Image (tube, rainbow, N blue to C red; front, side, top):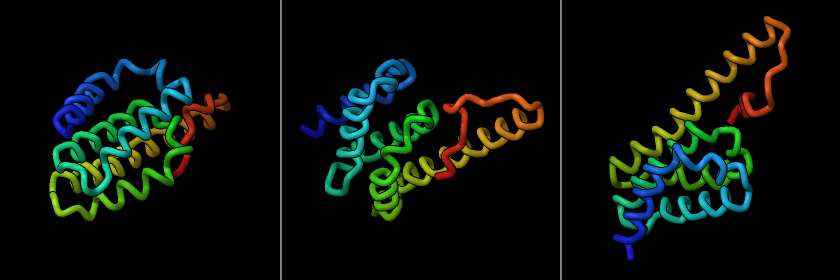
Length: 130
């Protein structure tokens, strides 16, 4: 079963650049997020947890505007993963927060530039200040 889940997580990781339409539909996005979060939990095989955290990093990069409704749960899972026995799992958890910080920095810079030019910024290009 873990081998199948690992193959599925790896396939998702490779497909995340192409699932924008799925992330625009809440039901499909929630299913993806629940599935990834289930694989991040303690007790799951280490490599599966690592690949699932890699998925979360890529989701943060590509779909940051969709994250607010999931952040409480993500915080719990990722914070636990940061304290994991396995260094690779912990490193991916840290990479998730680093990616969030990079996204928010870029968005704040966009907000400042738009404000200086007195131009509105689309809601999906605003920092959520996680």
